Image (tube, rainbow, N blue to C red):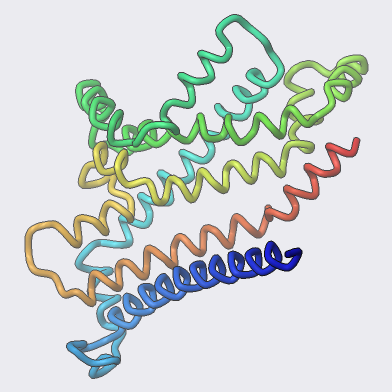
Length: 280
């Protein structure tokens, strides 16, 4: 009788791990097929291509103007990350430390871009941007991506700020620190892991954001994910290997950004800092 729950628990854990393993295996197989195709000369009905080449990468670079697209992607991502941090972190501090009438309603309205699909508000927002003369420009793409990323930074940062003892701020003010010095010299070092974690997530989110960028981008303001979509569905005949090479470049670019970001912040660092603050 006592062994039945243990057996059921093991069966459940085994089934769960098998399901996770099956998912990971399919994901790796999908990535492997795209990478293999990007290096294959011809691949029809066989386990491996008939030959191997790197010319599809050079072809994709020239055909899709990937140099300009990567530059635009980096500019958009950098601008969104910086602006989202500059706006979101102070706003999160105000939301965490100040009580005012209608705070919950305001917070709910502020977080609506995270609760609803981007396409539902992306179309009317794109219409407004085009009417304002910002549609199709890099400024319009940056503004569109700020709509979900600023609330995202606020949502991530509020728990970090609430963990900071208000007495630390009070002590700093006693020693003459103004609001600006308090925020820069006292709170920023304490909140740095949370800020880096939030900006890391914003970075990944912006690179992968398709709907809002697609609706507001023009020929000179396309990010890599939008250019990849056009390379697949735009008119004309394109070699599958060339499109796959572009997809590999997109995956590698995203991976490089992640590795650079994780060089400065890691999940274990965030958890450790949170435990230390809770202990104090």
